[in-house]
Image (cartoon, rainbow, N blue to C red; front, side):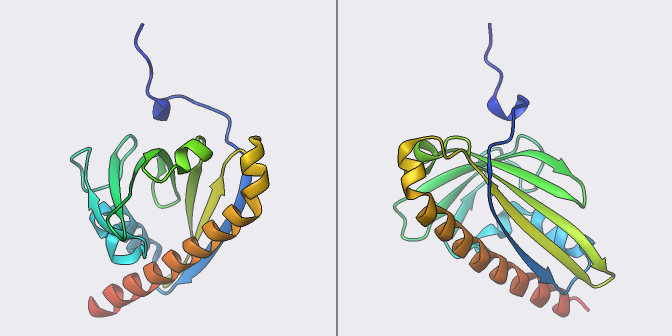
Length: 171
């Protein structure tokens, strides 16, 4: 019997932990297009120096995996998109990393949701889900949640700047 990859199985979503959001002064289509290009992650993610397209694909689709090299060169993480609803949502899991995050939070996943506010404004929400049943996670969760929220907001701010700068240069 062959194992089914985790990204192809339906599972119950882990517990909601936090959500960050930002308004971007660009159309939903522009924000969606920007986020589909995996090669742009290092442009806006403050903790990522480089992205390897390990699935050989530059653009997101279900099952596509990519490896992020974390600033400082010591660590990497692999991310895989497991659900994509065009112009609405991207769900991503983290199958492995060299920092120990996937050992601590093996079911950690992220949902990015886009909403059209008007023709030139888009809201991007990023929600984090993981179980906190392990005693270590319960003990550290206050710190973990705050760190994830702070780093996600920094990334969203940088993404907003990158998209708005790209959008204003293309007018």
